[in-house]
Length: 203
Image 1 (cartoon, one colour):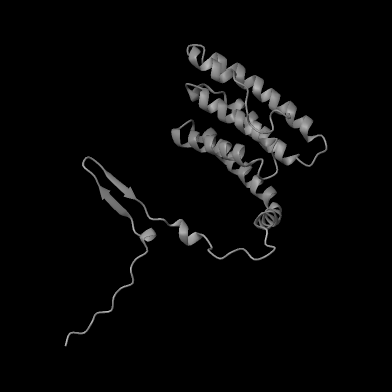
Image 2 (image 1 turned 90 degrees about the vertical axis):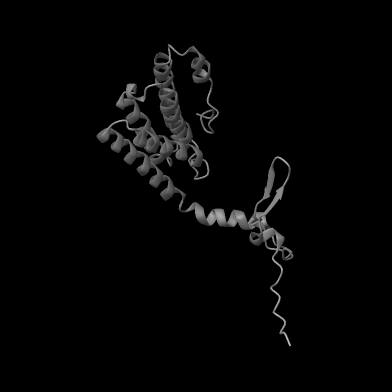
C-alpha cells in the first residue's frame, strides 16, 4: 500500500513572482514583500499613529544636532580630500553628495537655514562646465558658511547672520557661473532662476 505523501502547503501567490507570456512580450509580476510589513490587526481603541510618530520624532530630535554636526564633518572632510588630491571625479562626487545631503536633511534636523548655503555649493559644482576652474576659496566659503550657520544656530540673530551669508554666497556664485558659462547661453536662464530651497526665501 502506497503511503500518501504529505502535501506541501500552497504558496501564497503574493510571495511568488509570476511571468505571463504573450506573443511579443512578457509581463513579470514581482514578489509582494510589503504584505509582510503590514500589521493586519486593527488598531487598538484610542491608538493614534500620528501621535506615536510625533512622539518618536521628539525622542530622536535630541540627536538631530549631533547628526547635523556629523554631516558638517563629512562635508569638511570631503573638502580637505579634494584640496589635497585635486578635483578627481571621486572627490568631486563626494563633495557634491555631502552638500546635497545637508540640503535635503537640514529642515528635518531642525536647521532649515543651512539648506540654502549647501544648495549654493551644489549649484556651483553642477553648473560649472569645468570644475577645475572653481577657485578653491569659493569652496571654502561655502563649507565654512554651512559650518558657521550650524555652529551659531542657537543665536537669537541667526536668521540675520545666515541671511547675510547666504546672500553673499548667492551673489558670488551667480557672478562666477555667468562668467564660466558665457559660451553656453542656454544655461544662463537656469543659472539665474531663483532657488526654491527651503530657508532661502526667509533669509
